[in-house]
Image 1 (cartoon, rainbow, N blue to C red):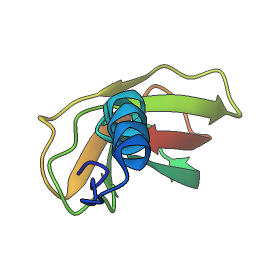
Image 2: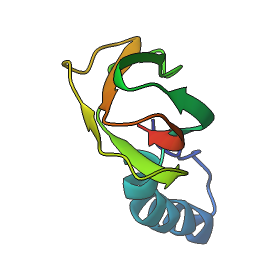
Image 3: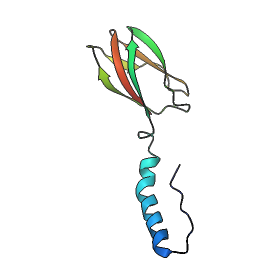
Length: 98
């Protein structure tokens, strides 16, 4: 995905479009920016399988909030549908998945 550049006889408009695209395309294509916030996910002790809702191969995840003293880690390979997290104690978490 990137910004389209529309052909126009006005040279300054073409230069502006090219400049905007060069500035914004790295942001638009960054997988971290194109993520989803999953809120209030209840983790039980042990393995938890979570549908990440991305409809594509997941690249990573960030724990953005947790309400208990627990260690949380990924315990299965990333795939196109689920994220498997193992928790050392029950906890409610928010996750940014990308």
